[in-house]
Image (cartoon, rainbow, N blue to C red; front, side, top):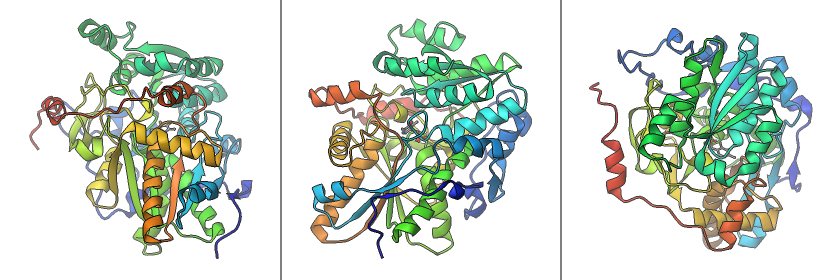
Length: 455
Ligand SMILES: *Cc1c(COP(=O)(O)O)cnc(C)c1O
């Protein structure tokens, strides 16, 4: 029986006590990251200059559940459990028999799902005596989340923000500074990798790959400084599983089982966080849910990239990771969903995609903004430009159900609000949003710069 409530809010006692590691249940393990010089799998010692040992061990663990430390749960309590909504007014507007649910992460202090991982990352770094963290940020959500977490655990935070977002989302910088962080426009002149890019192209819009190189360069040069990544890595996906664990309980309270779960993918963390616990249930034969990842047509790593070993950053400082990539020096055109503007994809999620466990589609940004505006006018929440990609696919599926009469249960991750992305909505409402699509030659050209390794 479907619950008549619109909002399903768990009380604090339902806050998860452990993160779920999907690796334990996969039919095959993901390929390891490789050292770029030796082409051997990287060991914990190779990663020690960048990350504290607790996080390195989480990166490689095959343990099914990892306990959430009490000081981290104590911070999670500020906004978790997050609400799950039934989007009744959106359903009505679409005239669909589908039942649409969304798990809303925009209630966090940063307005997105990112604090689910920034808080444990800051906690483990503080515990190991680290005094300062460096990082990159695209749309600014990750920089905000890390700045917030660092302020709680008394760590300095230095952020490289991609120029295309820095110039269009100035208030993101204000929030990071309120939380005590220092913010650079990337490419910047404070690092060698930034200066090299600026020498080639003084007007470079920047990219997440470039900003990562800058943050890694600074962390690697100073033993008191470490680096934090907001997506892509296994430990990040692990921390995000609190989303899916709560959603399972809430869907059970709602009396529905999702037939389809839809999420947007930049580096893959919010999508993984929602689907992994549900995938566990599916692999155990308890549900028949399917999963759909939605990426921007302007940065289509799953649908047009290659599954191969590549660097995580533009300068080539990171280990080689096997993932869906457009090439580490591919600089995507600026799109409003800055958080989805990454050349690669989580290696773990890429591996799961190769196993054929979920599908992926790419959406142009005008269709996404249209879905975002419809969502705002029916549900009252202005979504961040990133999850409007998921909403565009949800709207398409719900319309299909309206034609076929299928009463499908759809669950989506509304991973952030868009109240700091209003310039993007302004531009859309004024008719100024252009769809970005790549000729195959440009994708092929970037793929010729992949690291030459023979495996
Ligand atoms: C960072 C971000 C994304 C993209 O990152 P994923 O790791 O793919 O989740 C998407 N949406 C929001 C709101 C973000 O902050």
